[in-house]
Each structure stands twice: as C-alpha cells, then as structure tokens.
Image (tube, rainbow over all chains, first blue to last red; front, side, top):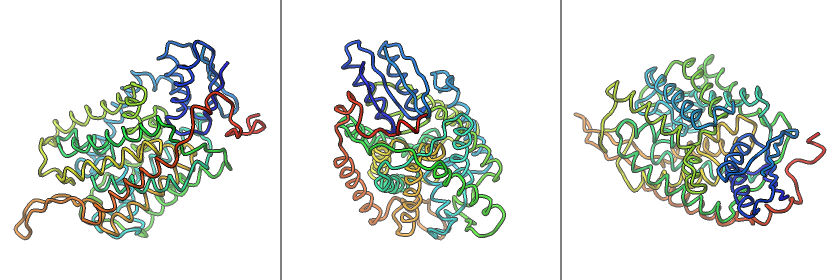
Length: 68
Length: 381
C-alpha cells in the first residue's frame, strides 16, 4: 500500500501526486488523503481515467481515497 | 451534488451560468462586461475610495455574491473549512500581479470569454497570452512548484471575508458612504437585488463544480484532460447566442466596448493572469469561491487583487479603453501607459522568481507520510 498525503495542498497538486503514485504503483493499492472536496473529485477522476477502482470515505473533515 | 461534476453536469452548469450572465447583461451591466471578477473588484476598490478613478467606482454586489454564495453552500454541504498558512504573502503578490495583468488587458478570464463571444478579436489575442501563461505555470507545477500546505485554523477566521463583504454591501445599499460612478463602466449596473441573487447562485454552483478558467486550461497541459473546459465552452456558446440575438455581436479589433487593440499588451496582460492564476491555484473567480469556503489564503489573494486594482488606477497602470473620434476629441488607441507596461513586465519577472524559489520535491513526499501532517490526528476525531 502506497500512502500519499496531499492534505492542505492547492489545486492541482493532489491530483499530480495521485497521478505520479498511480503510475509508479505497478498495480499496488494507493491510499490518498485529501482535505477538500475539489481535490477528492480530481483524484477520483485521475483514478478512473487510469482504469483503477476508487473507494472514498470521509474521515473528519478529510477524505481517504483507496485506489485499487 | 456529485452529478454536477459529471461531464453532463459540468455542461449543464455552464449553460445555467451562461444564462445567468445573460440576465445580468440584459439587466444593465456594462456591454461585454456582464461579469468580470477583475473589473468588479476594481469597481469595489473604487467605491471604497482605495482609488479615485471616477468612471470605475461602484460597490458591485456580484463580488459579495460570489464569496457569500460559495460560503453558504459550503456550510450547508459540510465543505466549509477554515484554513490558512500556505504562503499567504506570496499569494498576496500573486493576486496583485494577477490584477495588474487583468486590468492591462481589461478583463479577467471570464470577461475574456464574454468578449470573445461578442466578436471582440482582441480577447482572442488575450486568450493566446492566457494559454501561454497557464502553460508556463504548469511547467513549474510539473517541476514541483508548491506554496506549501494550508493548515486548519480557528473556525471563525474563514468567515471574515464573507461577513465583511456582506456588511459592506449593507452599508453600500443603506448609506451614501461609498463612491458611485455617474458615467463610465461603473455607472452601468443591474439592480442590486438581481446582481446579488445571480452572483449568489453562480458562487454556489461554482463551489460545487470546480469552475475555474485557469484550471480548465491547466488540466489540458498537466493531465491531458479537457473536462473542465466544458462549462467554459457552454458559457461561450450561451453568450454567443445572446449577443447574436440582441445585436451585441460585432466581429473585429476596433470599436469594441471597454477594450483596446494593443496586441502585445493584451497578450502579456493575460499571460500574467494565466501564470499567476496557475501558481495561486485558480483564476480570480475561483479565488473568491475558495475564500468563501473558508480559505484564508484565498482571502489574502483577494486582498492582493483589491490592492492591485487600487494601485492600477492610482498610478495609471491599467490599460485605457480605445475611444473613437468625437467632435471634441481625436480617436485614441488605448492600452497601458509606459508605467503600466513597466509594472506588468516587472510583475511577470516576479512571477518567475516566485515560481523558481518555491520548487519542492513533491514526488519524494508522495511515497511516504509527511513529518508534519496538515491536520493533527486528534483534530480528526
């Protein structure tokens, strides 16, 4: 499991970090933490466009996206 | 609200926003300037007497509506989050330069699209600059540019800008404290209630569907993804139809309302907006939406834009609109003064300095948990 903590970062940094992590993951599960709904939607889109499944849960004010 | 971020949702939202912009155009806002984040912030700066350029002073309710609309929907949908601490003073400068660039061109990216839809070819020239600016910013983002993480802060802090703007709006409506133009763009405006309601809806919709004129282009460069261009194209199409239907469409460089045909300065003005907006994480409208949902950093960017607008008119940096000859006066070509040209170029140099001095190794941080999480574990409970 790869962890990416993109909380508190401005657009489009969370999406770029997720993109890099997915590319380098070789199919491994990637867990991305983001702190805004915008970043959440952007990362979900990145996952889908890379043909990966994504499951999002809310933890406090943050979002946890598990990309498998 | 997830539906708004589907392709169909983005398209429909863009059509709705386009229709709302047309309402403001029909209700009295200036020609080709039904909404302009930059021009309206400049008018607000004038109304507050931060500058005294008589034709551009009016407390635009739209500015209040964008921020408060975003604030209200964010609170209602549990997305309001008071945050701060991501290089605020750097963001102030980015806001400042973004405003100088926009006022040299005479419009934010949204007004650029509105001008494009009215046949103003100068705006198409500006688009070249905007795209080049976003491309430059994207190169630095790809190299690891970051202004750092924002942190959670006192919950009340994020309410300061929306509340302050709401109070100022009440004062502007109930008192004669603020300046108001009698001629020029500042004198042309829709009724207060129409402006406010339309802007509240746009602010709320924009908060939900990631409307960003810089982000739409940026995602094409960085992610080969044109999805966020959909609402922008929709706004263009609606305003094109509106302009064709109402006789507002006039193809050409000359004789366009509140515009000039100084191509180099139109390009460089929008280049600064695109570059600064990419580094700041969004266009001027997006900054107001972010400020509404609690980002104190975006509020600081807004203040940078407000002060930038004051400087632009106090020191004659803004582009002058071209004028046609009259019985009394010869025609003028318009465009920025020498001072405006120097400050804009200096501003672009500052953007390069900011971009080059804030490169971090994001990739290294991506694989491991950071040492300083944005939110302490106990705060998440």
